[in-house]
Length: 287
Image (cartoon, rainbow, N blue to C red; front, top):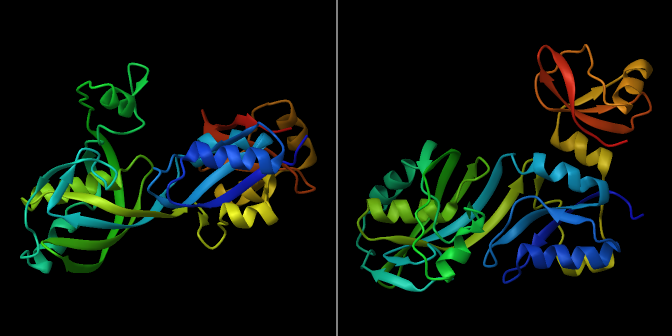
């Protein structure tokens, strides 16, 4: 069996997340590989990939906070809300006051009722929304609550008749940066779409740890399972009796404040436990 752990990939533009997984499968010599959170083909940056037993961490990592840098073009809308889609409308936007633009982006901070773009991976009656759009169907997705913790506008500059805006965003899982571009453009009356997107962080993993696929060809740079768990979740050290109970999936009489990684006295990662009904109860046991 291949070693278990995470690979922090700096995805190249043009690649699908599935394509990255296929490459890591070849490099790791195993079919048991998955990723935590899709990146669109045009996007670059952090894609967390799990190998072997670490694939079981991925569903929990997907729920963590994410960071992005992006460029929004104001004055043009597309069917996908990004540069990959056909143009729908064009409205000159270079005349907009930068302070007004910054104020419009400021409205996208906090808890939002966000309407996902129709061309997304969200399933509608068992079928991906983007596939329904490609099949010519009308797709109306429901708004959902997301949280944008921080949005910083770094630059506002003319690009011909349009206006390009560089932003950095720190947000909850499930937030669509494309939707922020769309909604700000709509609020300003000129429309908007995303022209560049780079994911800078997924939970504790950021670009400083990420490696391109070309770099991974030389060194897979696997983050060991225990190190990955310590980085992503609060760590709880157990005594020998507690560790024995965890190995068979028993609850512990120990207070926890959040989903936590538990370790035996020798430092080996055993499981993820959560607080429930006044006890620590297993979510996923890895031994």
